Length: 234
Image (cartoon, rainbow, N blue to C red):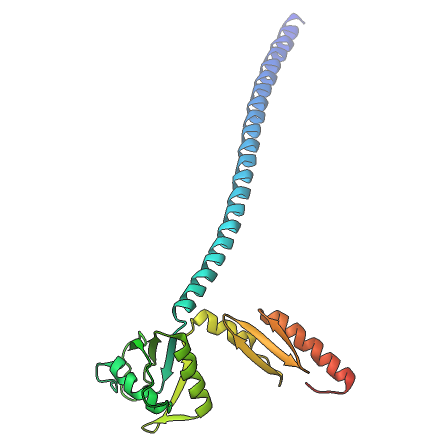
């Protein structure tokens, strides 16, 4: 019996030792879990701060992009983009060529001073024979002359030079062209596009202005419903 008691006591002592070791192990695990939770909490805080910073930077980049696009278009405010002239027609001196050609092409009064600052082809590789020629970019010193030339081209309608159709456009950035394209209405309603990208719709003598395609769509949709109700077609 004494031997059995000794064995039981020895086993109990061993079990107690194992329990103590388990407790120490659990304590170590708990400490590690606490450390991990602390690190996770710190990581969540840093992630939230990073996301907030990314949102702020994205907003800043969008604002800067808008300002850059605005500055680009303001820098091109006096520019004309002219399409249709064959390659090499300027014979190495585009400014001189346009000083002579523009007044005659647009039927300007004799002695009209254009004050061209510079003129060149668009910065693209020279096209192969038979391909569409690159447009000309012309910078005028005065905005009033640019408006005069655009209006003259519009009033004359179809323009030709040596059996080539000639087109005149304001020189706008691609981003602004895309915005204007989005604002073009599908309905047969009088409209106008103004710098930088404002759509004005006139209906029954009242003019409304829109800066986004969504606003214009809502207006046209509401107008369509009201016209159907009144038996009119916009």
